[in-house]
Length: 423
Image 1 (tube, rainbow, N blue to C red):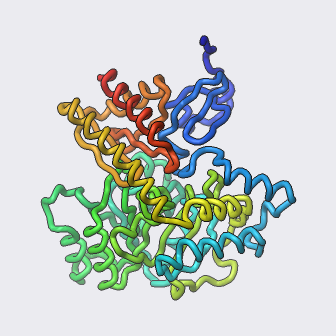
Image 2 (image 1 turned 30 degrees about the vertical axis):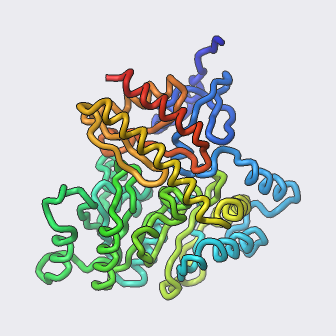
Image 3 (image 1 turned 180 degrees about the vertical axis):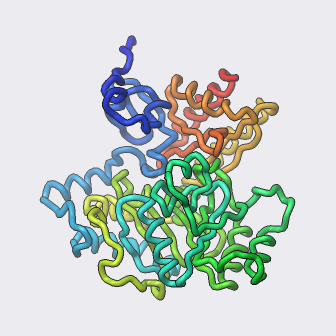
């Protein structure tokens, strides 16, 4: 079958130069279903990107689509600010029943706006309001969003430079494995907290990702996370877990921090919480931290009722039996891990490491430009994978949790071929 070259002229002439994903995948997409996307010429691409983790249940999931279509057909409220609606009530009750209550999580639910960055901004603002302190501790290679507060706790120098203004009131500490075992975990941090001459203002909060997706798929050990939680508790510092990309089952359990046995003070959730790729985010926090005055933190797009509808359907469909969803994700993860191990064994001088949890994995190369070349070749072969890490040195795999074993194996074969065919 012959296909014409994609017509990207409209995007090149009218859209800002800031666009990025379309540069890595130079075609014009038209439709999508499950784990496949199709361009306007009808060519299929297996999707190991899943909307940067916002499509954990695949594209146009039929169960969620049916719920959304029924809601729209009956003229259900679409835009509701923070008004009480039937759709919001159904989501809140379902979230309490299937997520919070079974895990014994004592959280109030805040709808801070449509994006993950909105949730992070709300979390930082709340932590500062509750404690009366300004400083927040974040970690090397962290990524928390592109608005100024979220950017301040992000590590990537390129992203930070785009702010154009100072990004104050943040102290950076080493993430797990950052020092390669050269120093005891948290010894420096705890020394600074204990020493009144250290110059470190007592933080309002610590914000952390359990797996740094954009930072290079850096996986924190459960013991490291539990030690961090204990340190925060001892020193009266609030612990914020950013679960925007790694939550909603991405690592296996619904929340990525569950394996560490911790209960953060504040949790940010977005991306796949709506289940259908619709904008939605949550800021969850202990009930005693709910010190907001009515309207003190608001926004026009907090009440995306179609997102509440699909979120409720996703929870009812996939999390009524959480163990089944978790087993499926972990089984898929084992397929990916085995394939990456085989690639690493076949290319020992080129592959630096592979790592991940659940269905988020990274393949790191010694040659920092190799990941981009692999991603480009994978696209030519019909697979969508992105790169991550501060130098773009990691091929990042983020397939839908609902991907079949056959689709997973197919994508992994394409990835192995892409590695073999690039230098």
